[in-house]
Length: 66
Image (cartoon, rainbow, N blue to C red; front, side, top):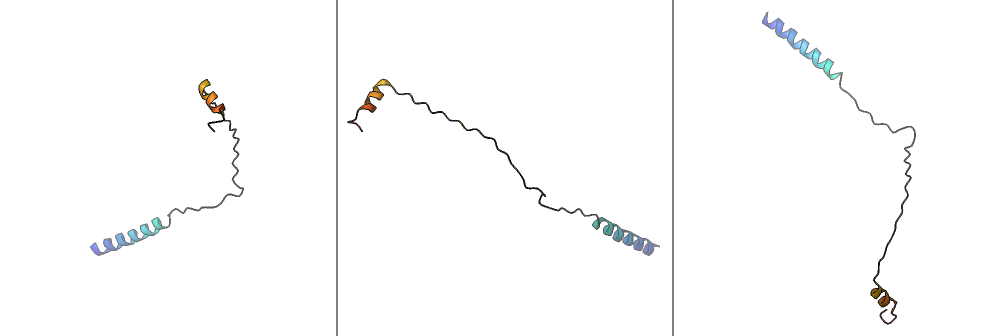
């Protein structure tokens, strides 16, 4: 009786492993049908502010320095 129950157990384990191996998920990577379009509407503004003292302004205007 032990031999037959061992045989039934081993057959059921074999069948269970076959069934479980048939259910493995697969991953597929496919390119899209249409091209990828990225619209970037960017507005770039810059502002430069320079503050100069009157003394520095007169020095800069002096031609002898430069």
